[in-house]
Image (cartoon, rainbow, N blue to C red; front, side, top):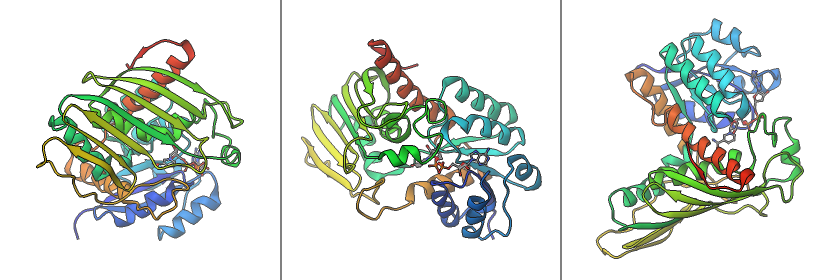
Length: 342
Ligand SMILES: NC(=O)c1ccc[n+]([C@@H]2O[C@H](COP(=O)([O-])OP(=O)(O)OC[C@H]3O[C@@H](n4cnc5c(N)ncnc54)[C@H](O)[C@@H]3O)[C@@H](O)[C@H]2O)c1
């Protein structure tokens, strides 16, 4: 039997089935322990994961179990505190998106992992989608010519019951933001990843429908490091919730793709053929079967990173940059000024 990294979970809420399934399907990962403040949720996760015990206290789990990686699946604003506790036990961390909700908290967790000599990996499972990888390659290799415009449509739907379903949802302190910090951050991260960096933002964010503290609708004008311009629209107010759509246009070609694959692939060079798309993505209300491929790939990558002593696919600093873009969008909306992403 090849060596496997032993995984623990902190937080057994909505996203935990993706981690339980990902660990079950990742050849180099094995589930060893689960923890949630809510004993019923912890017990259910233990049952699904084939464990005969569960924890309701993080430190008890960290002290009792021999773990290689702990997945942080708690409300976003708690990620830093929980990651630091794990790192202080000399255990590697795999943290759900967003890395955390403020620059100070993110820097503290990155520093704690460095100081303790453990790895900090971050989940952005949509980056593993083959259409996004092909689009990134098309930009990086110059096949689109000079890239001039890029756009992301992140138009989702969450109702009031969703915002009322947890004390932390829709709060600045624990959710860190709304349509962009929670749902749209995947798209912000993908656009940044494909285009090679978002440099400036000029934005407007507002609450137009839902009774929450945070924005439910946002638009931003983007400036990319490669000189291109872009737009981003993010919302949880668009019924019934639409496909995530990205478009990238340049002087020698144009492409557009959604959660199931390419809608447009037109290239001046006819030999640059539309790549085959592997897998599909989708969120709530997408109306078709989606896969857990992204989480499985990232969990397997984290397990191998630990076993091979290398960096995981997405390190803390990289994931922090995407949160910094969202924070810059909020700052621009508050001040009415163009903001440079730090
Ligand atoms: N990658 C994705 O597509 C994706 C999708 C959904 C959620 N998420 C992220 O996952 C995180 C959790 O979201 P969720 O929807 O699963 O939330 P949730 O509210 O359903 O679950 C959070 C769980 O954490 C537990 N918890 C809180 N404090 C704890 C503590 N001190 N010790 C142990 N357990 C504790 C709660 O009891 C709860 O069960 C968020 O950061 C969210 O952004 C990512």
